[in-house]
Length: 90
Image (cartoon, rainbow, N blue to C red; front, side):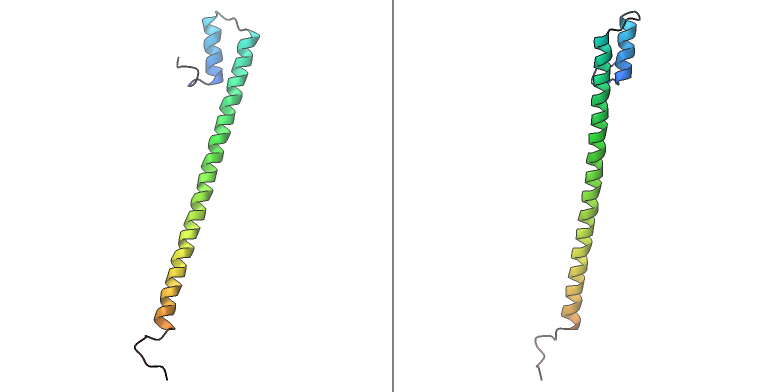
């Protein structure tokens, strides 16, 4: 089997069961429960990180789109509302 960091708690517990000829101690059961808890916490942390990254990406996309729109509006304003500087004002 693989090392403890790569095994699930269930895999580790099964390995312990077979290595000890069907005998499990309460310490080994407690360790398996602790491993399972740690694995669940890691899964939650990973999910939160992925969600946070996704939200940040949406924010960045929205910011970029707003900036692009502001530049377009500024260009339109300069082209259509402000007279060229070489024209004389009446």
